[in-house]
Length: 117
Length: 111
Image (cartoon, rainbow over all chains, first blue to last red; front, top):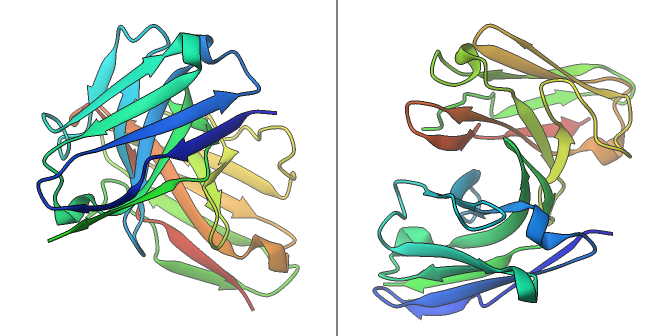
C-alpha cells in the first residue's frame, strides 16, 4: 500500500525557516512526480509546489515562489519542502501527494506549520 | 476567492441524490483540462474520489460519479449515506496561472 508520512512541521516565528519532509513507501517513488498542497485552518486546499520524478521540472504557486524550495532524494524515497521567510498566512497543514499527471492520487496525513507573528 | 467556484454547502437525506457543481472559466475547465474531485472526511487528509472528469479509483463506490460540460463540472452522489458527510473539492489546471487550482470546497451534510 502507498504510504506517505510528512514530518517537520511545528511552530516558527514570522521570518523564520522550516524544512518539511515526506517519507514514501509502498510504491516506486522514483517513478512518480510529487506535489505539496496546503490547507489553512478552516479553509480550502491550495496547491503549493510540484516536482517531476527526475527533479527536472519544478513549479511553484505565486504565493510561495522565491521563498519555498521543493526537492527530492529518490535514493531515500523522500520529498522535501524548504520554507524560508515564513509569514503568518503560511500557517496551514501541509500535505505531500503523488502527482499522476494532472491530479493528486495518494496523500499523506499532513503536518501542521504554525507561523507566529 | 477560488479560481473554481463551488457552493459552500449542500445537504440531502439518506438515500437521496445530491449534486455539487464546480464552475471554472476558459483558462481551466473550458479549455479542456480535466476536472478531478476529492473527498475530505472530518479531521482526515483529502482522498481522490474522481479523476479525469468521470473515472473512479479502485475502491470508490459507483454511487459517486462525475461529469463535465463547457466550463463546468458536477459531482453526483446517489443513495446518500451518513458516511458521505464530508467536504468535497474539485480541482483542475489553469493555463493562465500555470497552476493547479482547487474549488473552495463544498460541505455535504446528510440530514
